[in-house]
Length: 172
Image (cartoon, one colour):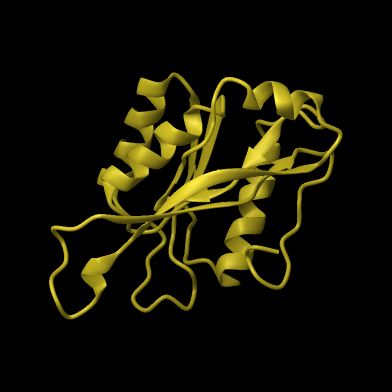
């Protein structure tokens, strides 16, 4: 599941391509948070086309949701919706949800990960991912640079009969 608003089409394509190493289907949710200044429900056609084309090239299914309005409830509402949307394509107790943002890429996923997930009794697992950092948002022009930081975090959640509910902060 990939969340985005007004991100680089290149970043979106990289996120989808990296997720496809682990996923059979990507659920992507567009739209600004309610408190985002000047936010809109949709990023635009370039971003959704980048997602569709990357999913097709990677051979994975793709669902894109564009809300009718901005996300009232901000990150928590959007992330909770992503889990509900994921339920539409997931097989409970078999499938897993991978949660990343458009500026993130899965980094340490090889052919053994699917087997490890299938054989574990755990309901949550970690995965390594890299995050782009937008250096163009500061006064000085850094657009010629690309910076990524790599971390490992709980980003895999086993699908269950009931959707996962996000509360407090979007990472809880």
